[in-house]
Image (cartoon, rainbow, N blue to C red; front, side, top):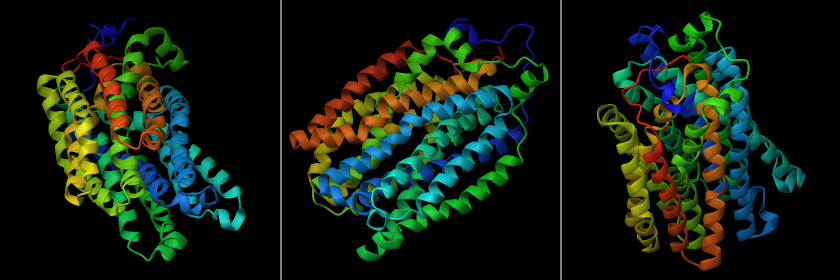
Length: 442
């Protein structure tokens, strides 16, 4: 089966009736659960930049401690594809809803446990070992979470507004970023000794309450009608991953690289920028955090607008525009940071998030889900998206830190982003447009 064969409805296929109240419930549950997952994920990123080098890697010195801490942030990327395969298989074979309950629980346990970890001063090398193990759990949880949350909406939404509905899943990214950055900023107001002693733990422990609420919402949802129809017909795949590799190689390869610029850019804008402003420029990290907070807040209304636009003019034009902005803004971004002006530093991060990441991030759920049939959609979308995180996201912050350390300038990082953008733009052009197609079962 070629890529284009998955994008039109077979004559004998019955299209499930869209239940708008159920679609709205799915959107709310997807947003809430995804926001919690990304809160957990980005909370680690913020802590890896400003807390963990001093708490878990203090014996390595300032520069080596920061690099090692950022490397542990990247560990989760390598376990996200594993989570995508495990829960994609479970979600395609048995239950979309139960897979999402499991992923949220795994992510929540990992984050809560980080808040209880002893420091390197208390238990020595065991502390960073436990930290890395829990980061692996976070990667597995998020790897299975994203695909299921995207499908929960896409398979329940009306065709003509699928992008808009699906953006609820993507809104979890800035919402989680906003919540995690806000919590770190709030507790960083404590005296440094108290913040490093116990204050940083509270945001991690708070995740336990959020996860309980998310589980309550997800357990009450029915299966998406697209999947339920396939389930009732007893036509689910035995090995979803094998079918992805057999029937959807082209679109999977393109989807792995299509968001390279968006992924690299996002982690540089929101994670590495904190370390760069504080460590390399010697400025208060709160200046960069302010930009992250404002940018994330502005993404909440901006992303649905981008998604709604894609319902009208197509996924590719909107995604292309966002990727192009990332490429063109890569050099000015570091120019603005290097001014050492707090307002221009914040402006750089805000523009990068709203105009660069916004158009691409808003569409990832619907763009990936529409490229696969219901039969193996969970696995296909999850594997492609999470492999992209390995290729682009995992090394982003570490490569940026190494480039700046070697060259003494952020310009080398700009060319790194531009190179990724060229690859992404080629993939956008090669993908088939899907915004007006009907989802298929087979």
